[in-house]
Image 1: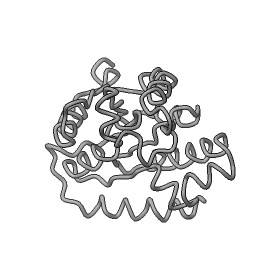
Image 2 (image 1 turned 60 degrees about the horizontal axis):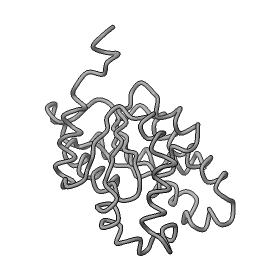
Image 3 (image 1 turned 30 degrees about the vertical axis):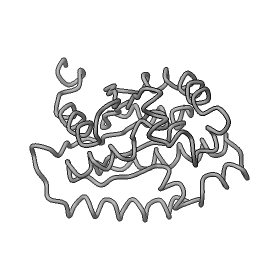
Image 4 (image 1 turned 135 degrees about the vertical axis):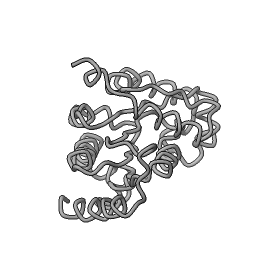
Length: 203
């Protein structure tokens, strides 16, 4: 797995090196997005990458490139194995020196290894919050999301209740994306990325 991951990430780093750097928009740190289904992690992540010139990495997409489709891996190996491998993928991305924009799967924060990786000193973690109605609209009422089958609203609320404390635990910034376009959310995140972290402003 490590070799395949390394190849994917090296390609992403090459894109970053070739991008035009704008000192007014390009942060030196990694920007990591966490949050529930429908928060806009992938859409906003791509918008942040477009603004900053950083490469965009989606942990779900990277996992699938290495291991195959997530539903099949999940069915064959179970959730515990999936979360452990997901944590390895995220840890590998954040263990590299190159900055990037990383979108994490909604349940990634459930694994302690992922939470340790997100706590690294060179990453700004943004919890993208969203209202229930907006989230369900964005995911098409649960269509194409087997986990939401049967009772989309109730399931979404239950999953959020299980994870929200962890989202807030790992986050440097909480941004409610309800009513925001991806571009609006991206610019708010980029503006925050230029502010010194508390540990940096108060030695």
